Length: 111
Image (cartoon, rainbow, N blue to C red; front, side):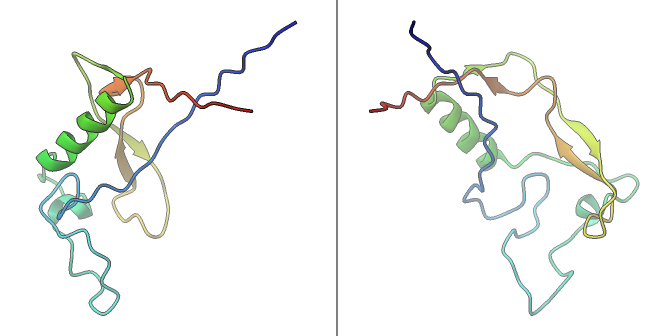
């Protein structure tokens, strides 16, 4: 009897962009000047609308294609509710049921 394992992965990466994914704020860690790299979008202030970083999108699609993912014709973003002290707006923008890419593969030779 032969068994072929299939393993699913959820991958998180930090892209080498100059700004955050949904606003123009610099994304570099700066402990000497806390709370200076924020804007109304970062803070979730009423009336502020996120705009996706084009470079982050380009890098994400490039990675998806390299992993032989299927690129979705339609996608959307969701607000995941979290109540953490370091997340003042109370939510994180994420993809849940309609990610922009899926079903990629990485083949690994074992043994």
